[in-house]
Image 1: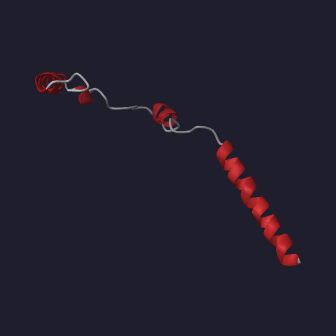
Image 2 (image 1 turned 90 degrees about the vertical axis):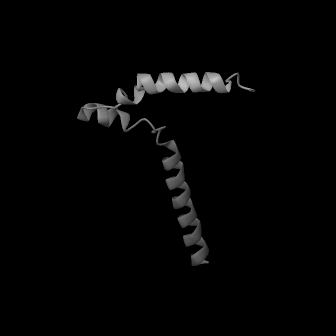
Image 3 (image 1 turned 90 degrees about the horizontal axis):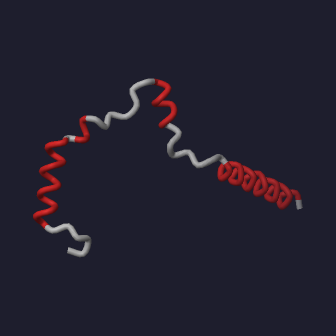
Length: 69
């Protein structure tokens, strides 16, 4: 196989993972503070929203000027 995983290796790893059951220990945050913290994992800053709002305001101003002509 191109990635080095033979069918035998894949079956062996699958059996080991089913034995370990890592999903039973992956429960995520339990406290409200922990939940609040991880809820921001996808946040990358608010600059895009600021630029989008500025563009909307600029477009409104241009439209207003064009309507006044």
